[in-house]
Length: 522
Image (cartoon, rainbow, N blue to C red):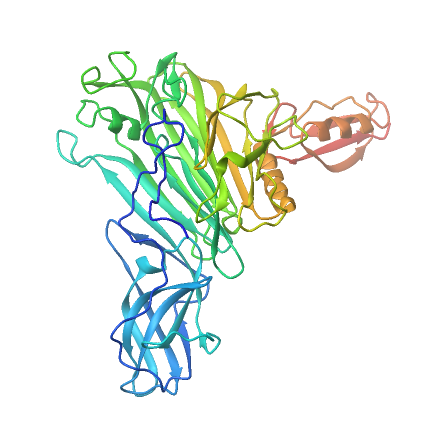
């Protein structure tokens, strides 16, 4: 079962096999039963009617919130009691014990412990006779609920007391979920997959699309450089010197769609530098932060029942000057049973490769210049559909020069993806990633294709004057779709050739956007 450390981001990126950093005070999921309960043996069946089946919740660790639960029983009456439990796989956790049943057989608890339903998989609520552990749960009906988790991190003490520098958010959906941290904290923190019994089976991704404060190897720079110098987001700033003047403030928000659990996070982080360029920075060498002239606006979108998440970083100039970016985006994988495994056996198929291969530290994989591109991930030797390992895909939307492996241990397999870009004066530039997970090759491939399409622009070609067949080919080649074709008389354009097009050439539109044509009848 999953351990209690929510964000397993490495604190020391120079370690060959990073040590998890505990972030949650909540105990690990375990099978729980009530104690010293009043008997409810007369109860033969029960139905939980509130909340609704398929409801979505987020447990707030900063300000613990509760869950209202109510329902009815058959055979229950005054003096009987039920325990309300959250069942997932072969385990359960108790949300409320010894809940009294009324004369009519109904029961309710307005403040059930929501934290006990946050088990990194969906769970099914059931009201069972108090103090019992029924082998057959069929008579005790209840809704499947999906519970995520939220926590924020502020500077404690000193001149920057109370300043927000990091967040944690887990989004649970029916088939899986991901948890998230800020840009340099862990990014896409973990990916989780659940099976048909609602059991958490697999931990997939771990710390992806992250820009850590120090590259893992050789450890001579930060993973984010601006204009040739080391730069840091808010969590890195906290790690460097939480008392420094000019300390940046993170702002964020999130929304969970109550109907399907789709999650959107907005994270804005001013990027800073130290006045002293000594590396690595320390509180002594970096008593003051100054702006790097760039702010990152990150948007995270999780959907497809919890099997895919997309990350968009929009780096924006804040000083009216142009800037260069050099990124070593960290991508960590686990892909093993939630109780543990050997991530040194994680295998990858990079763009241009025909087979999967495992990698050792210092392995470098040159990458083609084309993008969007897809990196496929699985566990060596695992069968298609293996629920103890899972499979995944990483899609990136801008060319990368190489992938360099910096960790290849039992805990995780990590590579950095090297990308560069230019931020125009008074403008912005965008980098995007998508992470897809699942048990089946075909399902992961379909999700990856969806991400590729989302990252591919239709660039409208100039087709006026071209024969219709050539125009159709050019439109398709531009990742566009041929729209309506109308015919009109023309004394200047040859019969069968394009007179006009809509939209005009050069427009960048969504993948497979339609281009309408007017064709000459002669």
